[in-house]
Length: 291
Image 1 (tube, rainbow, N blue to C red):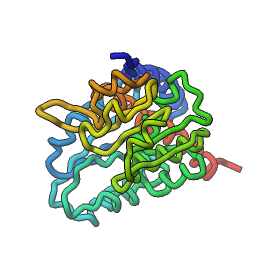
Image 2: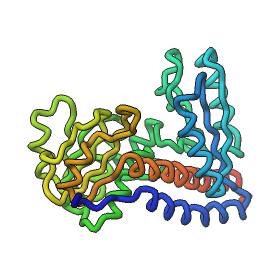
Image 3: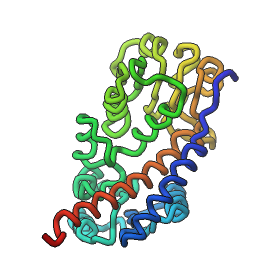
Image 4: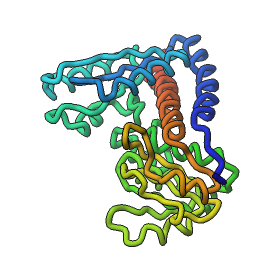
């Protein structure tokens, strides 16, 4: 192995340490951040992720409330729940756990969360703001992946970047975030011809497709940074979208799966919770302060 392993857990620990100071300051002024997690139906698929969110939140001083609703709940009832949380000044962030029952469209729920409480960065307004280089409450995974790249000794301005995968909540936001930082970005997707032609000239490659082993070492420029965002289960193991063995022999830096983007994504969620509490505090101050 020649690549330097990027320690996502270390990056996340540093982020949480800084956030704990912000949380303490918010608490001092009466604005202790609180997150509410919404699970609908059988939550076994997301249980581990929810426990991790709660553990990391509480370790940072952020209150975490988990709510589980029956799978039979109607969309109208669930949007009513979100409306109540939107109006509750004690709640600063709302997390909608996936998967959801088939009759509950996730995009409808994402739109129902108030943009100031959208700590996951999934509301159309949150994603749209990235076009204007407004990074407040951006989509967590995309922001986390870019933050990881920023920790490397690379000059981002003018960096040649390839993003493999063009989902609305990961690939496309990464492309806009990197363009906002001055990088030159190419986005590849399932209709791209000869993805390797693009990836071999890139100084940094992000991959988020959900296909294990998609990126191999012969698709990388020697010394490039590889940020693997994929999460797949193969023979009982969790692996990314890159073939780690071959890529680690070519790349200059590489994120492991697990232990790379995942921990930084949770830390970014907590950072969004702090930002949301600060934004709501400022909003209430501006709206209700005595003249």
